[in-house]
Length: 279
Image (tube, rainbow, N blue to C red):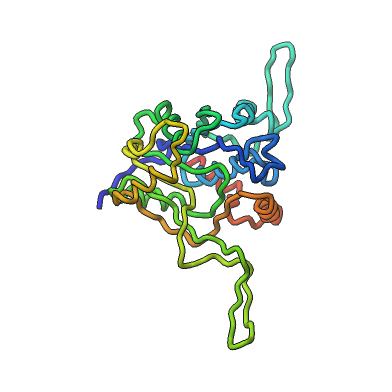
């Protein structure tokens, strides 16, 4: 077993933000799926906060559909979120009531209007991976309370090229526990504990790039990950806690309700975020 000590701050996280999100057309007709809000912030920002809590600071947003919406949001990040005073004579701007100053580096990379996930990763990495020996990849629509710091350590202490977060899929149906003919318990859509699926939070060594090509048709989840697994180069970091993908309007409504309740499992208290930022 190998062991590397790599500061998460030096690890770029590539976030796939380019799809059309057709099953959420109520929202994505007007904005890209990662910008659909959960509470007052887009789901993309929730995902980035999860990474930042574990020390990751560099994000490469792989955009396509309505990419200008994402770029405008980050170019005007504090203007969107806070009151502002503009001195017209000097064209200077003061933002008010800033509870936190984020020390993130955010690159908005246009990776093609119709490119599939693998092509987006390859194109963005060619431009922005730099000399980094490892990188992360995730989707712009999945939320979790997984300890990404532990997943990162797990990845670094193994020689394989890739690591994926494995999660238990939620059942589509409610489940009875039965004693004879009597139902003694009922669980609404429980997670299927003996099955593991792709939870969408990956870490890769840069060698993974030989598995992906820049062709529009390259789908990360097909040939690249299949071959990586067949070569014995993909580990699974198992997580039995919270994980949800915002795929439909029902998913969006459920996530918004969780957030409004104040008990969203992925919620990171402001104090914890500030402490991590100062670490």
